[in-house]
Image 1 (cartoon, one colour):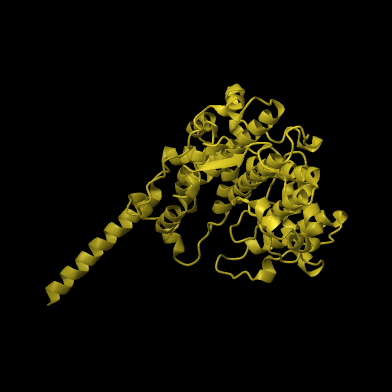
Image 2: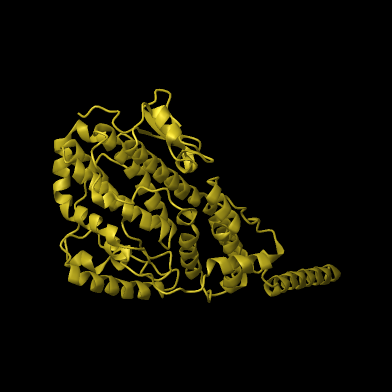
Length: 437
């Protein structure tokens, strides 16, 4: 019996030594070059703050009526200080809705909740408004201040999160931006078409800033969705107007096929990486340090995120083919995970979805190209749509996703890449093809 006990102790000791040895080897392993290169792509050299207005300020306070312009900067700064204190709390410290609310919540009335018919990702906006325009008009009465604030965002040049890079902190209520779509549709239905067109163009200016000049995946994807919804509404309005009806001067330069760099997810992914990295504990409590290495976790995450900034992705954007990049191995059964089990789990959960987000930006670019093509057809009338498409500049109609006419020749379409719409045509009516209601 004693011999068995001694043997068992020796086996356990040997197993313990092996476990400790494996852990030490894992912890002391240098970061692979691929991870170091990925981190370099996601941590650009600081270039200073962009010039022009930061859309974050306006969007953060969109939901509050009556905030004086002179007080906005101070409120955002006060909120930023409060959020910094919250970010310094331990990860397991709860944050209540009161904690993460703006100080404006106790000082100014919040915008009323409302149900409106139009959505960026849905077709038929004009038709839905026409079902009951009086009800839409009544619903928008309490939204007038919000609509003015949304319109003012078009003067901003970039979006930079003012708060600490921490995933636990709140983000602005971006969905409030969607309410202006119903307002633009109503304006056209009520005969105020120039107002509708100006509002659509204003929203697309804002959307392009969010899509191409933001530091997070959420604002970039919101911008892409805004572009799609407003291009669809633009086409519907132009279908009901005479082709000689001019667009407001504020629309100049808005609907233009973007350059590939404008569709890059890299700036947004760099901001997203900073937020995710900021959420990883530097000094884990208790024994958690045995299973978490912040630096190596960042390296693993970078492998799944840095593809947005690669040369291969830029080439795909230039060719307008789906920009996809390989996802790093997600198996936790690797030596590098022995001393970073929690980090490998985090990377496994976060990694696979990142390479899909950029497709929505590519679709937005294709839809801006489609809108530019519609405006070209209005400015260059031909005998029929087929002849017009043939005369159109090749940069607009050709490529990996050529513009196509519908079978009845009344609409123009381009294929989608993103999500459930992958392979589905984004179709809009041609100018002047619908009868004004």
